[in-house]
Image (cartoon, rainbow over the protein chains, first blue to last red):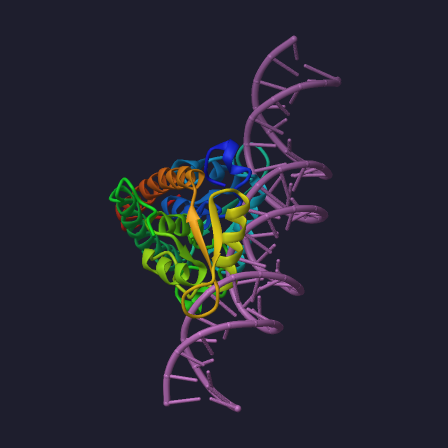
Length: 127
Length: 127
DNA sequence: ACAATATATATCCTCTAAGGATATATGTCA
DNA sequence: TGACATATATCCTTAGAGGATATATATTGT
């Protein structure tokens, strides 16, 4: 999961939330782009500890297109292999706004949880 | 997932991080307890939008005991059915500390992401 | 001219944990 | 004694994470 290597093998519980969908939406909100480039851009958001397997991003993009959050078209011109250029839709922007709302709540919960931990008495675990 | 009902059915991507393991550990750090009571206590931490299915907590507790993060013993006395009382171990405290470390990072990432969103120009999505 | 590498997209398979349903048993209360 | 709250436990299905792999096209070096 989330923690240091040695321990993490025994601890499967609790996967890190990677926020791949909102990251893609944010990236496309800034500018249209294509899969390969998106992969590089969303690293900046900090939610992905490890390299993202490309297959996962393409899967997301396809599902998001099915859901109407993004549209795409082939771009043949330019150098290299053909690219599928994605753009965010109005619907996609709505969903991103909802993600932000959720993330604000989550940030608040985390802050409270962390404070609670640091305010714990030194000799806990009583009856 | 995370968002309003209507939309959420089309959007499977991205499950909310529910932090069940650290919540249980935190709860037991404060005081020993048993499954049924833990379920009620961890609602306070705010990570669980819906009712937690009891089976999930008992599963967690068993796996955490296997991993050495908690210990348990039956308590026959008292009213009602027998309770299995759990206590956090030194190992469990270490893991909780790691969780806190991770959560601090995640809180920071969320804060940055949210700021980035609010600083977005009004007419985005250019070429 | 050819090999190696980088760019770019896509599909497929496995495995784990989430989610939910359900079973069982005991004590309480009306 | 029937209903309900307390308490623990097991089981099943499914979605998605993670990873491996396939395919094709440009670019670069020799």
